[in-house]
Amino acid sequence: MQELNPHISVDCVIFGFDGEKLKVLLLRRQYNQFNGGNNQEYDYKLPGDFITDEEDLDSAASRVLHELTGLSDIYLQQFYVFGSPARISSERDLNWLRKTTGLPVERVVTVAYYSLIKIDESRREPAEKNNAGWFEISAVRELAFDHTDILKKGLHNLRTKLQYEPVGVQLLPEKFTIRQLQNLYEVILGRELDNRNFRKKVLKADYLVALDEKEQGVAHKPARLFRFDRKLYDDRFNRFEGFQF
Amino acid sequence: MQELNPHISVDCVIFGFDGEKLKVLLLRRQYNQFNGGNNQEYDYKLPGDFITDEEDLDSAASRVLHELTGLSDIYLQQFYVFGSPARISSERDLNWLRKTTGLPVERVVTVAYYSLIKIDESRREPAEKNNAGWFEISAVRELAFDHTDILKKGLHNLRTKLQYEPVGVQLLPEKFTIRQLQNLYEVILGRELDNRNFRKKVLKADYLVALDEKEQGVAHKPARLFRFDRKLYDDRFNRFEGFQF
Image (cartoon, rainbow over all chains, first blue to last red; front, side, top):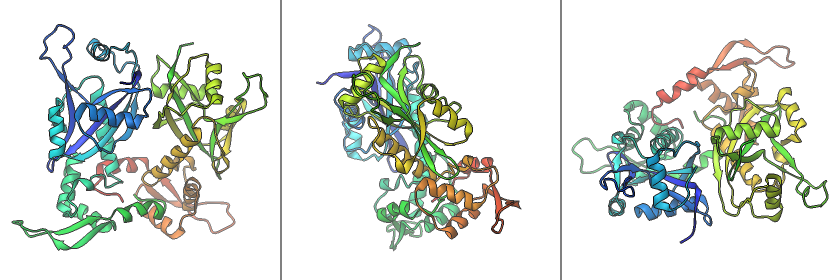
């Protein structure tokens, strides 16, 4: 066991798409477990912990996520650092941190990471074993520490990113319909999009390739299938001519 | 004087445009000044320092930039955290840090900020008073610490951002020609862009508004002037319909 550095932590905002809804992975925190208080009092927090002095930040984020939720092989990306001197100031939060770590915790600067993954069986089960669970974004209320702010900022970043990167295509089947892609976008953005405009944009994006195939076994008129061409997409940066917007 | 926190620092990558070239603000570091060595030995570093325990990260970045370079009222934006355990490991760097601060420096996680400003007289002079200077990006060689990596990452972020935000318009006069805008883009990207395609994109962007005016006092055929409409641009997020690219 390597020593923890009580000045710097990582927190992970793991967004999950279950085919219908956008969710976030949260851990239950029994904040009174050391106070002789009611053991059943709890709230929720993001998976996060202090880094050790020997690891870099990305490794710390992967390790902490794995230790706390059982999840591994998740592509985590730094998105913001939260460092207000007052971000951990309530007695409840300070006490809980000091008691669980045994460290003289004062100010903690936390590096926030996020990821957007598909929730399948392999990602549902580990979480449940670890007192973690997937919660619908729109149902999340006040979290521990400043984690509500971290979640909000993460969601804002994800939505902004969606404007210029097809961040979600890896959550869809390899071949997908425009309707499926639009659903995914609507779920992440939390609002409806205009069907005709969305369709127009898809048809204009050369890296979304129309296939000579239609969906099968549907009650309605079968729609054309598309695939995402990673190489064409990656080439965009080289072909960039001054504005994409 | 408030106490410094030797675990966390901020570093500022200040990009400047002087109307022709892209530059970066660097400080001269006399790395042997405490070693009884040659006082004239120096290299260059980004403006940066430890935070104090009472300030948040954004305030720290502004304070440090002001103290070291005299610059103020600069909009600084976090872009990445550098936290490799080995990022400050050379004797030269460790010694210099310990001697200049008097602190038991070990591992330092640094939060990197950047900004893109116009270099005018008010921003040339303070720098020169403070042993700081504006250096052409393409001429920058190895910097102190891991500052070469930080600069590279900052430049990469700036260039990526340029793809989906008109990051540079505030560096141009209020009314500008397409040629001026394209020059700015070419300087930031470090390569030439296709004139016709660039022109087409500008004409398509509704927030770049063509004026009923042409440039004056030029030897060549006067070109039409444009202005940037901040409100139209900001509305884009609300009008977003699934793809901008």
